[in-house]
Length: 83
Image (cartoon, rainbow, N blue to C red; front, side):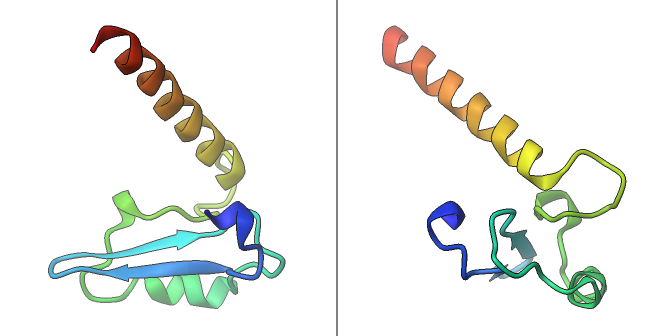
């Protein structure tokens, strides 16, 4: 979805018990570092479910998104043949 909307820098999803940040790795303008740093300090922020370009020095967000999509597609292929 983000790939189709390069104007979106990211999305913040707020649930009853969680706050999740999805940064768009294909954005024309990246989220400011200050924003992501402040987001991690927000009440109910869920680091484990958020997708962002930090922490720096790790695998890039584009690579992680690509790997996740490949994994979902491989699971979908198996599900098609076994159900």
